[in-house]
Length: 306
Image 1 (cartoon, one colour):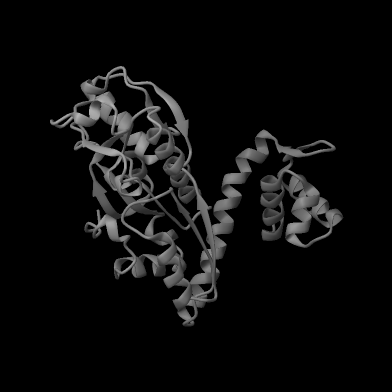
Image 2: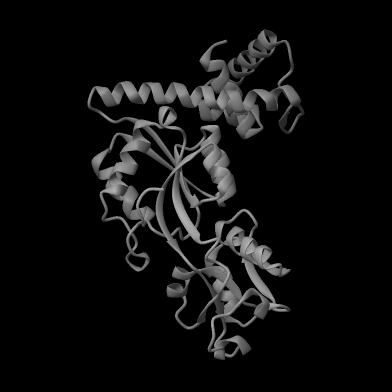
């Protein structure tokens, strides 16, 4: 089995199309097809179901995809490790982040990293914390800035960025806006909630807090970006339970403390694979992060490593 066969296989699996994959790899379509056929002959199993419009993975193809991605990631890490020993950091830094992550100014960090390591190609993907953790574990991302869950620690290591309590945001005319006491999940029974997709860190934190309190809630308005959430609350269409630093993004909204979130504190981390699988570029980024100077001003300093 040749590495190029695996590279070709992964490209076709990602694009679900031979022509697009061939263009991206800068090889002929006939050569790409021959490479896939050779791999299928060696494995004695079809890897794709081919139609005139697209290709999809067979069961054997799905089984191979994760292993192929891990192998290619390890090969890339080996090349980068040798380059690092020679004093030059090259290769690719594949980074994932959730939106408006606390404890790090991602754009500022990447700008500083590029200034120090101009030969490293930076790739950035934005997604929910659950998907990002899976991609780091699979070797598709070098590291990710995300919300920590207990399950992540089983297969990934983490560097803590910051931790903060959750806050209720509501319109100034909402009945809760005049509440003098700290709210409890029970106080929010019957409210219309605006929240993120269940894969997002803030949603996971809020769901955990309400479950621990035995309070059932229904998310009526589900969004996938912070500004849409704030717009809906700003129009008094619902309330939101979010990390405290979100209140700085829309000062016109009323922010109220909520009990029951200390056990499920919103902690953001840099998720990394085991030390032996961490790429030199990821190590360099973490070193730069730990040196300070790339924390968002309103979010305060990072906590010590977890």
